[in-house]
Image (tube, rainbow, N blue to C red):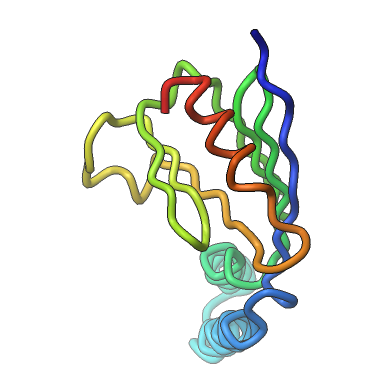
Length: 139
């Protein structure tokens, strides 16, 4: 039996505009601090890219997909894909799902787990469909 694919998008500007605004302002402020340090151009650009990339999760829209091959998350220029056999645990929350490669809570979850944000209102995937796919793959 194969589980049907489930796909949705999450736009922080629609779902959490205050948080998105704070993240964008913080990214701009970090870049302003980096440019005020008087460093050469290349290190300044690297610092700005690192600052924006770190805070981008707060203001860049995300596309999520669960299908037979695994879980995919696209955000801006970046895409992550994990096969089902790489995932050991799912933590369901009202605002999203954490998919971890560890069977229990681990300090590396912050770096290795995959977070799928769930929008509020009309673009949200059906909880039953999400649970059915996760349970089908043992999570």
